[in-house]
Image (cartoon, rainbow, N blue to C red):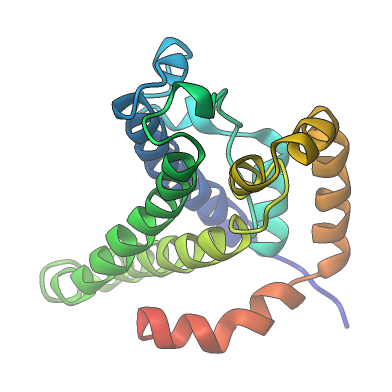
Length: 202
C-alpha cells in the first residue's frame, strides 16, 4: 500500500512539532533551572524561539510518524535539588504540559467556525487537531528511556552508568529512529489513533 503525505500535512506536522517541542523544551529548561541547574539557561533554552529547541532529525521522524524529539539539554542531576528524582519529575511534567495546552486549544474550534470563513476555519481546525495529536504522540514516545528522546533523562535518573554509555551514541540512535520512521509508513500513528480520539475527542 502506498503512503504519501500531502504537502499541507507535511508543513503542518513540522509546525506542530516546532510548537510542541518549544513548549516542552522551554518548560523542561525552566523546571531544571528552578531546581538548581543553570546549564539550560546558559544554553539559551529558556527561549520561546522554536528553532532553539528543534532537532532536525526529530523533525524528519515527526513528519513521517508523528514521533519526534527535541534537541537534548545538558542537564546535571547533581545540581538539582533532590537529585535524580527531580530530573524524573521535571521530565514527566514537561511532557504533560504540551498535551494539556494543545488539547485545551482544540476546544477553540467552535469559535473559528462561528467567526471565520470556512476556508480559514477549516485550516485552523486542522492545524489545531494536528498539534493536539502531535502533543499526545510526542509525550508517549518521549517516555521511552533512550536518548535522543526526553525519556533518556529517565534512564539517566534510574541508571546513570548505562546512560553515560549510551548517550554518546545518541546521533547514531537518532539516525536509526529516522530510518524506522521512514519504514513505519504511518503505522505508529494508525496504531495510536483510537487512543488519540479518546484523549482529544476527535
